Length: 171
Image (cartoon, rainbow, N blue to C red; front, side, top):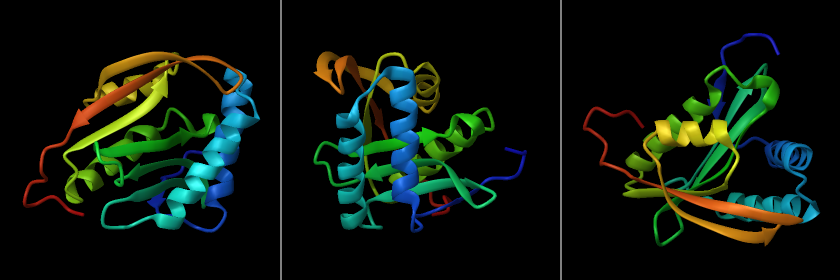
């Protein structure tokens, strides 16, 4: 991919399939996750997109040359806080700051929407993602070893309290 300025926008037809393909391909190739992972991601993302409420939820895509190369979502329906989900950047587009920008824009939206806490679940070993989460202020709050996706995974929960947006914060 050439160096072009990324654009950021919401859902477009085809994004669901592309996000699931990115997840399925990456996590199978690098972590050996089986069909249960891809099926769970597809089912849950489709359900989220069908109930997305723009006053509390966000689906955000990063695009280069019009093609989705990164995505993230904020699910504001959870009672314990907004949940950051489906964060991924195509490995061919990494190193351009897209991940950092997706997280920044998502947290800005979370503040605007009035969320006071954001949390996420990931697993041990995703070093680059963990660096981005911690740089944004997330802290590790829980770890547990679970059998899923064709193996044993050490899940990790990260939490971030959000402050209210300033009066001059753009939406």
